[in-house]
Image (cartoon, rainbow, N blue to C red):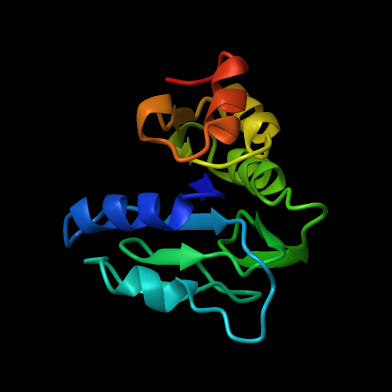
Length: 159
């Protein structure tokens, strides 16, 4: 999942509604400033029924865990299950994260583009759809900013 402006509230709402035994790993990309103390994990833990962890280099995704990509980074996934973090350019962390996930997980991948400005995620959803994955986008009525979901919808790749 990816989000920007309004994303923390959207994530908190989604995470509060998931079952205690969620069968898949979740990876969240949230546009936010790079700071010495990143409080996003703690904020999301407050409403999540699932454990929430900040991703680190060489971590492995765990089903039933919410993995948060560190601010200013994107995540690359290997067939062996390891995650590698890379510095993101110009707040575009979702596109390369989605593309990497699509290459590894193909039709088993579900990507979601939530509220946010700009267009991050739109290129990545094309990779997800091309690999046989599914793509969801938040609607205009519930988005604080509709740029990211609107750009994803404009690709024609949304389920």
